[in-house]
Length: 73
Image (cartoon, rainbow, N blue to C red; front, side, top):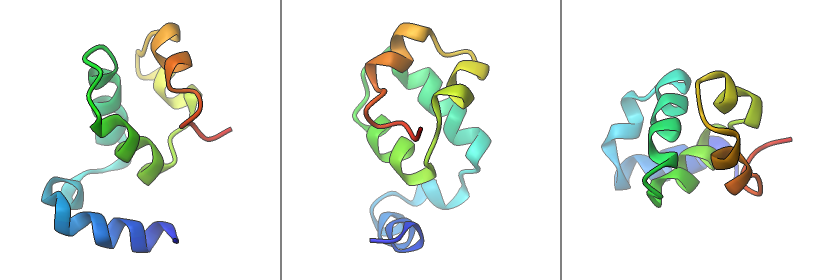
């Protein structure tokens, strides 16, 4: 399934994503890393975030390594 189709389908499930920019998604993932929120998977895969982006936004190295399987190379 393509990225555009995923976003379209996801809009019906969670309307918050329709107004979310890439920068907002990065900040949200960094904030959720400590809490173990399940929404991290959806945001990381939907926006195709990289480890470098998360580390530059202030995420801990350990937190990023914990989700390295989801991150884009």
